[in-house]
Length: 136
Image 1 (cartoon, rainbow, N blue to C red):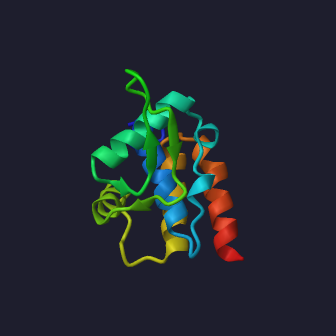
Image 2 (image 1 turned 90 degrees about the horizontal axis):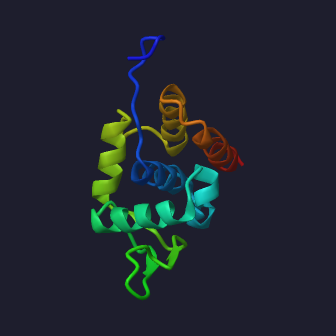
């Protein structure tokens, strides 16, 4: 617990990418291209490996990954057609303690509250942008 009595939770890179995909997924017309490494405060190779892990763990599907040579880091990652699996959605909602019956907007607001408590500042701008687009 931190000094305010809030549980500290360390999010790894894979979870950060997954939460951003989940937030974008809540929009009526998601644009997964907006989920980018620099917005999430991640190095490009860390982002690529996180996407690889999310696909491998069955949390997302339809992400494009290209590999080359002996490097385990994908050369190229494209999330344009990415979707969350049911397992991925359940994972996020359980982790963030979100009621699955909430509207997409309510879920993103709940995510913003949780991630702010956890000190993940890079997510604030991304979530605010998602919320603004949902309210249009």
